[in-house]
Amino acid sequence: MPPPQTIAIIAAGAMGSAVAQRLINAGATRERARDAGMRDVPFPELTTRKDYLTTYNAAPVEARAESPIYVDCNAVSPETVKGIASLFADSDVRFIDACIIGWPPKDNYNPTFYAAAGRGDGAPLSKFAELRSNIGDASALKMSYAGIVKGLTGLFTTMILSAHAASPATADALLLELRHSQPALLDRLIRAIPDMLPKAYRWVDEMREISGFVGGPLGGIHEGMANLYERMVQSIAENGDDKRILEAFVEAARRETSE
Image (cartoon, rainbow, N blue to C red):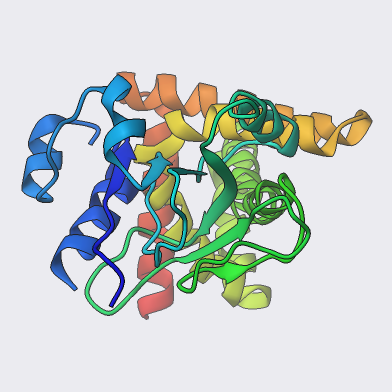
């Protein structure tokens, strides 16, 4: 049996702390970290004390390296992650570009981790779904996937607010037509919008990373989504009209689909 390995999780938010707890049992705040069984360690000590360093989220991995490994799971563009990787170029720390598809682990559910180690043959981490490609490819996957999933939520949000701005009757008709002709989209909308509201502040920068990834005139699509989520952040803070319109639309949609 190989010796036990230690994983340091940097900036443990909802995903990082949940993964840490899953690792310990199978954050943004210290209280959340303590609840997950984590211990605070000063950043300068991490490279001398840990076998794996992970930022934002941790991956359940099997260690095979003698030197520390830095696994970056942030939702950033390939160019951004390549810039991060360059910071380790003259060190003995091995860099892995990774992304997470899914939600924080809970009960029997686990998200999927993808990793690209930069050697063209994938990362030798047995618990990952491996990308046999180069640094930047895992982040490109995240940008592509999030651009669809979170972009779709942004499209829902934009058109509901636009319909309501035309008139409440227009929004009511939109709901009825979605129920009649696009029930799958309506079901997704019912789940997606409430899930977005507490996370909108995080999605602003992510949309801008996606915009940079897409590039050119088409990059404006997700730049517009970033502006939308900025608007939602303000409305959520103020319990403004946008938030209340969306919540009312979702509640009405739930009533319609339950009948």
